[in-house]
Length: 145
Image (cartoon, rainbow, N blue to C red; front, side):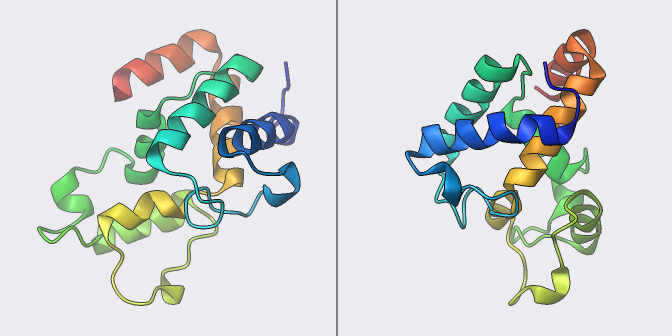
């Protein structure tokens, strides 16, 4: 089984390309899953299933949500209009190295947050879960669910 994040990149890229029916050359590490590659929420489930099947590393949608929201309560992460708060933006900058709030055209809405996830973020999440070991990864997935 792969041991570093770069070792997981080919499996993640394959899973994304297969699930979305696109050429692997279109799946770059910096491409966003939703905005650039055209994935929909249901595609994310398929991608995560394929990654588990091909790598043995189980990632749930809740794990992606946990990465993005970091356990910050909904009413703190965003306001009543579902605009991501200062706390939420600071967290996103911390966990998504590519995120730069200075490049936002207006406020970031809650439904836009998943669109920020890149292939590299997913590769890193797989590597993190693999490094945690199977037992810890299962416990973490159950805690998030």
